[in-house]
Length: 195
Image (cartoon, rainbow, N blue to C red; front, side, top):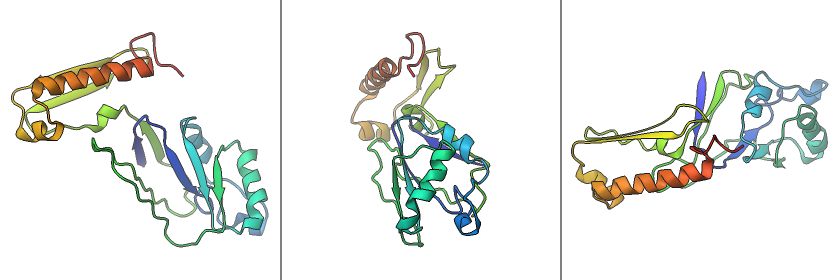
């Protein structure tokens, strides 16, 4: 079982076709077919995300290949064909506050997406300020409930002051200002989240 944990920002997915989504070279022996778990996982990809399909199949096979995705209701935004068969490398910069923006998942060939899950978390869930003296916990009881923030402090380490260029009072103000902005944008605390 593998879990992909993502922020609630909009994402870009680069997904291989052969041996990942469709049976490897299935078109050569008849019709293409989906591998296990694809439809369920695809349904969980947020509607605002961009999906880019990748394939080493020849460009002449574009039409019949993409028809399979349309037939099964698997949305996509862009499809690249005639790609090399070697490694696919993604290079991206991390967000200033530590969010890793390049994620890679290597699945067993022909294994489909079975056992692969997707979890979206709010951006402050990514800020794990764990060294002993400062604990910040963000939790959401349900979509209809607001966030609850608990800031417990005994002493702020120099690392935190340097990282955020703020003393504790300024850091706390920054958190609550950001929390209020995020709550307004997401609809939390006002009858639920907008969809």
